[in-house]
Image (cartoon, rainbow over all chains, first blue to last red; front, side):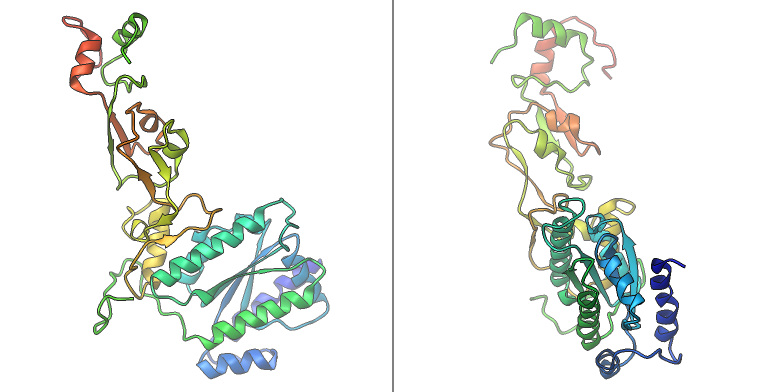
Length: 187
Length: 147
């Protein structure tokens, strides 16, 4: 069994833990308390670069470092592949937070992919902010393949931040937007 | 700048609906903002910089984009999350090239129609002015494909 397959094996655990009433897998104490404090589990989608973040995730899984059960990993060849549509549709379809984990600045395997990703994440943050959603729900992290602890720390940080936020409210596809009564259109 | 004799000869052979590129023709540029996908092709082809990519982006361009388009998909996702109407256009980071408002300056446009020819979704129309088209073709000459 390859090391990558072991990382993927984290996902079923996460799914069980996210389901209401299921027994939670042992998770870092900080993560569970934060999620519990705000009520209910959150889900985070992590878009990981194959060259660095996914390799770091792989190494951390080999070292049996537990990741927060809320996180789902998505493998990308390079974070330059990530588009605002990926990030936004992940949020619209059920994620409470999305993170993009890529190479250190200037160390992209494809030269500039992570710079593109950084700007796209910034763009999505501004989009979210302009429609009144917390921009912290979308974040970019950079690390090298040799820094599994940094990856784990990034995921835990994301889990903590998103866990402290209320669950992301979303309406059904096609449902019209009605501004909440009482707000005078400002802001 | 008047057309040369050779230019007139070439224009005679073109159907009247063909977009004409000479700077001297001065087409009327009609832009259909609802069809624009903001790819910026017009901006990169514009010889005078009349069309260019702006630094900001109006979020309503996503929210009001037609269904099925790439912008429409993004707008639909955003609509599901939306808690407030976007108040002002957002600033676009430099490496995000697609999601920008395309600016157009009438003053600088020479009506060459390059943008219309390169637009992938035909959101820009170059209408040759009636008088110029008639003069270029000349009286009594029949132009094929003219409806």
